[in-house]
Image (cartoon, rainbow over all chains, first blue to last red; front, side, top):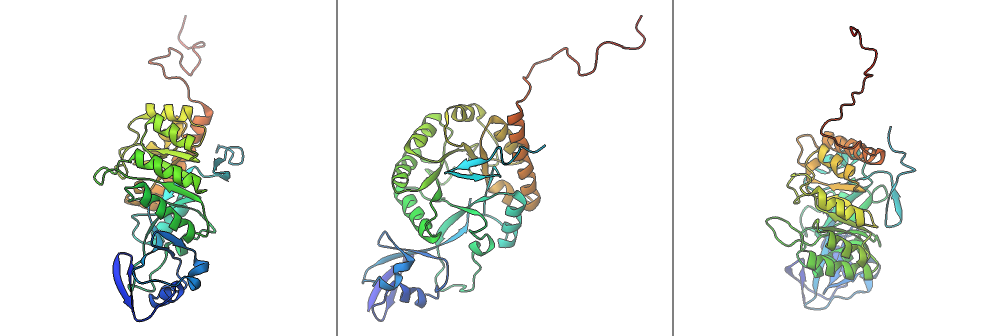
Length: 67
Length: 267
Protein backbone atom coordinates (compact mmCIF):
# COMPACT_ATOMS: atom_id res chain seq x y z
CA UNK A 1 0.00 0.00 0.00
CA UNK A 2 1.24 3.53 -0.71
CA UNK A 3 0.13 6.83 0.79
CA UNK A 4 0.16 9.98 -1.33
CA UNK A 5 -0.80 13.58 -0.67
CA UNK A 6 -2.82 14.86 -3.63
CA UNK A 7 -3.71 18.56 -3.72
CA UNK A 8 -3.16 18.70 0.02
CA UNK A 9 -5.35 15.69 0.91
CA UNK A 10 -4.08 12.24 1.95
CA UNK A 11 -4.97 9.29 -0.31
CA UNK A 12 -3.93 5.65 -0.06
CA UNK A 13 -3.74 3.12 -2.87
CA UNK A 14 -3.70 -0.68 -2.66
CA UNK A 15 -0.71 -1.06 -4.96
CA UNK A 16 2.13 0.89 -6.49
CA UNK A 17 1.06 2.91 -9.49
CA UNK A 18 2.48 5.32 -12.05
CA UNK A 19 1.18 8.80 -12.84
CA UNK A 20 -0.89 7.63 -15.82
CA UNK A 21 -2.59 5.00 -13.65
CA UNK A 22 -3.20 7.58 -10.92
CA UNK A 23 -4.85 9.92 -13.43
CA UNK A 24 -7.13 7.00 -14.41
CA UNK A 25 -7.97 6.25 -10.76
CA UNK A 26 -8.92 9.91 -10.26
CA UNK A 27 -11.19 9.98 -13.36
CA UNK A 28 -8.96 12.63 -14.94
CA UNK A 29 -7.94 10.73 -18.08
CA UNK A 30 -8.15 12.98 -21.15
CA UNK A 31 -8.56 16.15 -19.06
CA UNK A 32 -6.30 19.16 -19.57
CA UNK A 33 -4.23 18.97 -16.39
CA UNK A 34 -0.64 19.45 -15.28
CA UNK A 35 1.09 17.62 -12.45
CA UNK A 36 3.83 18.49 -10.03
CA UNK A 37 5.49 15.78 -7.94
CA UNK A 38 7.41 16.88 -4.85
CA UNK A 39 7.86 20.34 -6.36
CA UNK A 40 8.98 19.16 -9.82
CA UNK A 41 6.90 19.11 -13.01
CA UNK A 42 6.04 15.66 -14.36
CA UNK A 43 5.66 16.11 -18.15
CA UNK A 44 2.49 14.47 -19.49
CA UNK A 45 4.63 12.49 -21.93
CA UNK A 46 6.31 10.82 -18.94
CA UNK A 47 3.22 9.94 -16.91
CA UNK A 48 3.42 6.24 -17.79
CA UNK A 49 7.10 6.00 -16.83
CA UNK A 50 6.80 7.92 -13.56
CA UNK A 51 6.31 5.40 -10.73
CA UNK A 52 4.92 7.02 -7.60
CA UNK A 53 6.58 6.46 -4.24
CA UNK A 54 5.08 6.26 -0.78
CA UNK A 55 4.95 9.78 0.69
CA UNK A 56 4.93 11.63 -2.65
CA UNK A 57 3.25 15.03 -2.62
CA UNK A 58 1.35 15.76 -5.82
CA UNK A 59 -0.31 18.88 -7.17
CA UNK A 60 -2.74 18.44 -10.07
CA UNK A 61 -3.96 21.67 -11.63
CA UNK A 62 -6.29 23.02 -14.32
CA UNK A 63 -6.87 26.43 -15.89
CA UNK A 64 -9.78 28.37 -14.38
CA UNK A 65 -11.18 31.86 -14.85
CA UNK A 66 -8.96 34.57 -13.42
CA UNK A 67 -7.73 38.10 -13.98
CA UNK B 1 -11.06 56.60 -38.15
CA UNK B 2 -9.52 53.66 -36.39
CA UNK B 3 -5.75 53.63 -36.08
CA UNK B 4 -4.47 51.34 -38.80
CA UNK B 5 -4.05 48.04 -37.02
CA UNK B 6 -1.30 46.93 -39.34
CA UNK B 7 0.67 50.12 -38.79
CA UNK B 8 0.07 50.27 -35.05
CA UNK B 9 0.22 46.77 -33.62
CA UNK B 10 0.91 45.96 -29.98
CA UNK B 11 4.07 43.86 -29.91
CA UNK B 12 4.68 41.73 -26.83
CA UNK B 13 7.38 39.10 -26.63
CA UNK B 14 7.94 39.28 -30.39
CA UNK B 15 4.28 38.68 -31.30
CA UNK B 16 1.93 41.30 -32.79
CA UNK B 17 -1.62 41.93 -31.63
CA UNK B 18 -4.17 44.28 -33.17
CA UNK B 19 -6.15 44.61 -29.90
CA UNK B 20 -4.71 46.65 -27.05
CA UNK B 21 -7.23 45.34 -24.55
CA UNK B 22 -6.27 42.31 -22.46
CA UNK B 23 -9.06 40.74 -20.52
CA UNK B 24 -9.42 38.50 -17.49
CA UNK B 25 -11.76 35.52 -17.35
CA UNK B 26 -12.69 35.51 -13.64
CA UNK B 27 -15.91 36.41 -11.82
CA UNK B 28 -18.32 35.70 -14.70
CA UNK B 29 -21.66 33.95 -14.15
CA UNK B 30 -20.69 31.01 -16.36
CA UNK B 31 -18.42 30.12 -19.26
CA UNK B 32 -21.04 31.25 -21.79
CA UNK B 33 -20.92 34.76 -20.33
CA UNK B 34 -17.12 34.66 -20.17
CA UNK B 35 -16.98 33.73 -23.84
CA UNK B 36 -19.51 36.37 -24.90
CA UNK B 37 -17.68 39.10 -22.98
CA UNK B 38 -14.27 38.11 -24.34
CA UNK B 39 -15.65 38.09 -27.88
CA UNK B 40 -17.30 41.50 -27.42
CA UNK B 41 -14.07 42.95 -26.04
CA UNK B 42 -12.10 42.00 -29.14
CA UNK B 43 -9.25 40.93 -26.83
CA UNK B 44 -6.72 38.50 -28.22
CA UNK B 45 -4.88 37.92 -24.95
CA UNK B 46 -6.89 36.47 -22.06
CA UNK B 47 -5.67 35.78 -18.54
CA UNK B 48 -6.41 32.50 -16.77
CA UNK B 49 -5.64 31.29 -13.26
CA UNK B 50 -4.09 27.95 -12.33
CA UNK B 51 -5.82 26.03 -9.53
CA UNK B 52 -5.96 22.56 -7.99
CA UNK B 53 -8.46 20.39 -9.84
CA UNK B 54 -11.47 19.10 -7.92
CA UNK B 55 -10.76 15.43 -7.42
CA UNK B 56 -13.71 13.08 -7.43
CA UNK B 57 -16.23 15.88 -7.96
CA UNK B 58 -18.18 16.70 -11.11
CA UNK B 59 -16.20 14.55 -13.55
CA UNK B 60 -18.12 16.09 -16.48
CA UNK B 61 -17.42 19.66 -15.30
CA UNK B 62 -16.86 22.02 -18.26
CA UNK B 63 -13.33 23.31 -18.79
CA UNK B 64 -12.49 26.97 -19.38
CA UNK B 65 -10.14 25.99 -22.20
CA UNK B 66 -13.08 24.46 -24.08
CA UNK B 67 -14.93 27.80 -23.95
CA UNK B 68 -11.79 29.78 -24.84
CA UNK B 69 -9.60 27.52 -26.95
CA UNK B 70 -5.85 28.31 -26.81
CA UNK B 71 -5.83 27.93 -30.61
CA UNK B 72 -7.99 31.06 -30.86
CA UNK B 73 -6.70 33.18 -27.96
CA UNK B 74 -3.27 33.84 -26.51
CA UNK B 75 -3.51 32.49 -22.98
CA UNK B 76 -1.88 34.50 -20.25
CA UNK B 77 -1.69 32.27 -17.17
CA UNK B 78 -1.34 34.29 -14.00
CA UNK B 79 -0.04 33.77 -10.48
CA UNK B 80 -2.98 35.45 -8.80
CA UNK B 81 -3.17 34.52 -5.15
CA UNK B 82 0.57 33.81 -4.81
CA UNK B 83 2.33 35.56 -1.93
CA UNK B 84 5.86 34.21 -2.45
CA UNK B 85 8.26 34.09 -5.40
CA UNK B 86 8.52 30.32 -4.97
CA UNK B 87 4.75 29.73 -5.28
CA UNK B 88 4.58 32.03 -8.31
CA UNK B 89 7.41 30.20 -10.09
CA UNK B 90 5.90 26.77 -9.36
CA UNK B 91 2.47 27.95 -10.57
CA UNK B 92 3.86 29.19 -13.89
CA UNK B 93 5.91 26.05 -14.46
CA UNK B 94 2.67 24.09 -14.05
CA UNK B 95 0.95 26.53 -16.44
CA UNK B 96 3.65 26.02 -19.06
CA UNK B 97 3.19 22.26 -18.84
CA UNK B 98 -0.61 22.62 -18.91
CA UNK B 99 -0.48 24.85 -22.02
CA UNK B 100 1.99 22.71 -23.98
CA UNK B 101 5.11 24.80 -23.49
CA UNK B 102 3.42 28.20 -23.74
CA UNK B 103 5.85 30.71 -22.24
CA UNK B 104 4.00 34.08 -22.11
CA UNK B 105 2.88 34.57 -18.51
CA UNK B 106 1.55 37.16 -16.11
CA UNK B 107 3.55 37.37 -12.89
CA UNK B 108 1.88 38.88 -9.88
CA UNK B 109 3.00 38.37 -6.30
CA UNK B 110 0.74 39.88 -3.71
CA UNK B 111 1.76 41.35 -0.40
CA UNK B 112 -1.49 41.74 1.49
CA UNK B 113 -4.83 39.90 1.28
CA UNK B 114 -6.83 42.98 2.21
CA UNK B 115 -5.56 45.42 -0.43
CA UNK B 116 -4.02 42.89 -2.87
CA UNK B 117 -1.12 45.34 -3.13
CA UNK B 118 1.85 43.76 -4.94
CA UNK B 119 4.95 42.63 -3.05
CA UNK B 120 7.66 44.02 -5.31
CA UNK B 121 10.53 42.29 -3.48
CA UNK B 122 9.05 38.84 -4.12
CA UNK B 123 7.98 39.95 -7.62
CA UNK B 124 11.57 40.88 -8.53
CA UNK B 125 12.90 37.57 -7.17
CA UNK B 126 10.32 35.57 -9.15
CA UNK B 127 10.93 37.60 -12.32
CA UNK B 128 14.66 36.82 -12.20
CA UNK B 129 14.02 33.07 -11.89
CA UNK B 130 11.33 33.01 -14.59
CA UNK B 131 13.33 35.03 -17.14
CA UNK B 132 16.32 32.72 -16.57
CA UNK B 133 13.99 29.77 -17.07
CA UNK B 134 12.93 31.06 -20.52
CA UNK B 135 9.56 32.58 -19.68
CA UNK B 136 8.27 35.75 -21.34
CA UNK B 137 7.15 37.62 -18.27
CA UNK B 138 4.48 40.33 -18.21
CA UNK B 139 4.76 41.64 -14.71
CA UNK B 140 2.16 43.24 -12.48
CA UNK B 141 3.69 45.84 -10.20
CA UNK B 142 3.11 49.02 -8.25
CA UNK B 143 3.33 52.38 -10.04
CA UNK B 144 6.87 52.93 -8.73
CA UNK B 145 8.97 53.97 -11.76
CA UNK B 146 12.20 52.61 -10.26
CA UNK B 147 10.75 49.14 -9.67
CA UNK B 148 9.22 49.19 -13.16
CA UNK B 149 12.64 49.98 -14.63
CA UNK B 150 14.31 47.21 -12.61
CA UNK B 151 11.72 44.69 -13.84
CA UNK B 152 12.40 45.79 -17.42
CA UNK B 153 16.16 45.41 -16.88
CA UNK B 154 15.66 41.89 -15.52
CA UNK B 155 14.16 41.05 -18.91
CA UNK B 156 10.39 41.21 -18.46
CA UNK B 157 8.61 41.66 -21.82
CA UNK B 158 6.01 44.08 -20.41
CA UNK B 159 5.60 46.03 -17.20
CA UNK B 160 2.08 46.31 -15.84
CA UNK B 161 1.66 48.98 -13.17
CA UNK B 162 -1.60 49.27 -11.29
CA UNK B 163 -3.91 52.22 -11.95
CA UNK B 164 -5.45 51.60 -8.53
CA UNK B 165 -5.92 48.48 -6.40
CA UNK B 166 -7.12 45.18 -7.91
CA UNK B 167 -10.89 45.04 -8.15
CA UNK B 168 -11.32 48.55 -6.73
CA UNK B 169 -12.59 50.25 -9.89
CA UNK B 170 -11.08 53.49 -8.60
CA UNK B 171 -9.55 54.41 -11.95
CA UNK B 172 -6.19 56.07 -12.52
CA UNK B 173 -5.04 57.52 -9.23
CA UNK B 174 -1.54 58.59 -10.19
CA UNK B 175 -1.28 59.54 -13.86
CA UNK B 176 2.02 61.32 -13.15
CA UNK B 177 3.80 58.15 -12.03
CA UNK B 178 2.36 56.27 -15.00
CA UNK B 179 3.70 59.00 -17.27
CA UNK B 180 7.20 58.64 -15.80
CA UNK B 181 7.04 54.86 -16.27
CA UNK B 182 5.83 55.24 -19.87
CA UNK B 183 8.51 57.83 -20.68
CA UNK B 184 11.39 55.65 -19.58
CA UNK B 185 10.10 52.19 -20.58
CA UNK B 186 11.54 50.36 -23.57
CA UNK B 187 9.01 47.52 -23.23
CA UNK B 188 5.22 47.85 -23.46
CA UNK B 189 3.50 49.41 -20.44
CA UNK B 190 0.14 47.83 -19.66
CA UNK B 191 -2.13 49.35 -17.04
CA UNK B 192 -3.29 46.36 -15.02
CA UNK B 193 -5.88 46.70 -12.25
CA UNK B 194 -8.09 49.51 -11.06
CA UNK B 195 -9.91 50.44 -14.26
CA UNK B 196 -13.60 50.90 -13.41
CA UNK B 197 -15.27 52.16 -16.55
CA UNK B 198 -14.62 53.06 -20.17
CA UNK B 199 -13.28 56.57 -19.52
CA UNK B 200 -10.58 55.12 -17.20
CA UNK B 201 -9.38 52.87 -20.01
CA UNK B 202 -9.40 55.78 -22.47
CA UNK B 203 -7.40 57.96 -20.06
CA UNK B 204 -4.80 55.21 -19.63
CA UNK B 205 -4.40 54.95 -23.39
CA UNK B 206 -4.30 58.74 -23.83
CA UNK B 207 -1.43 58.84 -21.34
CA UNK B 208 0.49 56.63 -23.74
CA UNK B 209 0.06 53.21 -22.16
CA UNK B 210 0.49 50.47 -24.74
CA UNK B 211 -2.47 48.43 -23.51
CA UNK B 212 -4.93 47.93 -20.66
CA UNK B 213 -5.64 44.72 -18.77
CA UNK B 214 -8.89 44.40 -16.85
CA UNK B 215 -11.26 41.85 -15.40
CA UNK B 216 -13.61 43.13 -12.70
CA UNK B 217 -14.60 46.28 -14.62
CA UNK B 218 -16.21 44.04 -17.21
CA UNK B 219 -17.26 41.03 -15.11
CA UNK B 220 -18.85 43.12 -12.32
CA UNK B 221 -20.75 45.44 -14.69
CA UNK B 222 -24.52 44.94 -14.70
CA UNK B 223 -24.20 43.97 -18.36
CA UNK B 224 -20.70 42.53 -18.80
CA UNK B 225 -21.00 41.98 -22.55
CA UNK B 226 -22.05 45.59 -23.17
CA UNK B 227 -19.25 46.84 -20.92
CA UNK B 228 -16.78 44.69 -22.88
CA UNK B 229 -17.94 46.46 -26.04
CA UNK B 230 -17.52 49.84 -24.33
CA UNK B 231 -13.99 48.93 -23.20
CA UNK B 232 -13.05 47.85 -26.71
CA UNK B 233 -14.12 51.24 -28.06
CA UNK B 234 -12.52 53.16 -25.18
CA UNK B 235 -9.14 51.53 -25.70
CA UNK B 236 -9.29 52.18 -29.44
CA UNK B 237 -10.43 55.78 -28.91
CA UNK B 238 -7.75 56.42 -26.29
CA UNK B 239 -5.03 55.03 -28.52
CA UNK B 240 -6.20 57.11 -31.49
CA UNK B 241 -6.30 60.25 -29.33
CA UNK B 242 -2.78 59.54 -28.06
CA UNK B 243 -1.47 59.08 -31.61
CA UNK B 244 -3.35 62.15 -32.83
CA UNK B 245 -1.76 64.31 -30.13
CA UNK B 246 -4.17 66.36 -28.09
CA UNK B 247 -4.38 70.16 -28.22
CA UNK B 248 -2.66 71.93 -25.34
CA UNK B 249 -4.81 72.88 -22.36
CA UNK B 250 -5.33 76.62 -21.87
CA UNK B 251 -7.47 78.37 -19.29
CA UNK B 252 -8.95 80.44 -22.16
CA UNK B 253 -7.87 81.08 -25.72
CA UNK B 254 -9.69 84.15 -27.10
CA UNK B 255 -9.57 82.25 -30.38
CA UNK B 256 -13.09 81.16 -31.31
CA UNK B 257 -13.63 78.40 -33.86
CA UNK B 258 -15.82 80.62 -36.07
CA UNK B 259 -14.45 83.55 -38.06
CA UNK B 260 -14.29 86.86 -36.18
CA UNK B 261 -14.79 88.94 -39.34
CA UNK B 262 -17.95 89.38 -41.44
CA UNK B 263 -20.34 89.79 -38.53
CA UNK B 264 -23.71 91.38 -39.37
CA UNK B 265 -24.90 94.60 -37.77
CA UNK B 266 -21.45 96.15 -37.56
CA UNK B 267 -20.86 99.68 -38.85
